[in-house]
Image 1 (spheres, helix red, strand yellow):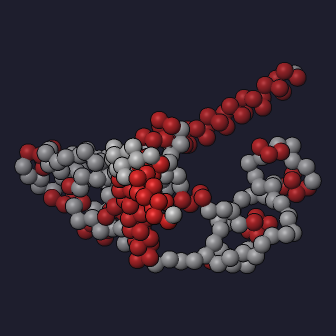
Image 2: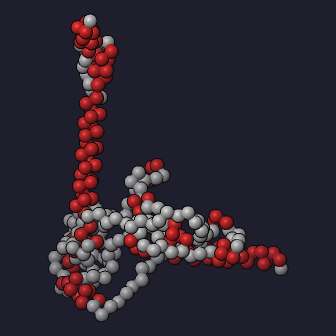
Image 3: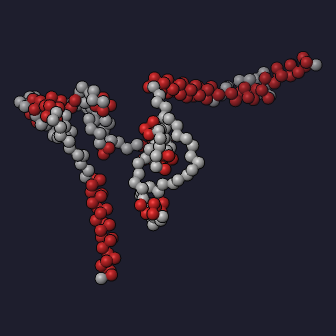
Length: 256
């Protein structure tokens, strides 16, 4: 009897993990229907599955159903080299190509390419700008007076009832929040909203600085560049600064 009781929790845990994995692998987005859904479907063909088959009648030259056909109306010579990248115009609802667009009209992470740098090195050099913002200690403590105007992240977590009671058996491995109550917190600061023009100017300035650094490195990296001038300053041996030592001697003689 004791062995059966010991095996039951492990069996339940295995079943729960299997169901969770199945939900992740076979995830289905919820379908919402509104009063204007038929209008969007009829006029703009919105809400149709992107994985539906291609219309055979359309490939032969003509489909009698026209825009009411449930299948794709695409030509065979379409280039689908970028069908793993999401169309930036479609994200804003401005793509005019429709089904003939070379890019993906679906935000599906399974169809997007994985970062090659992350695959090779285990991390991405670009990083995630959103994750670089520090968490707000006031929000973690329970309340931030600035709300959405705060310059730091407000991460919503479920508080651990065991930790609030005094002891959590999971410790730092607990999936719920273990709030801390520091008293010497700095005052929260307001988030500064920058204009797109200001951001573009800053990016252009950074690009100019990077190009200037590259040009400077190219200038000093040449055979007769900075290395020659450096040597010429001490002994006049370099190609770029052969007369440095002689000029210094002549100046010294002139002062006497």
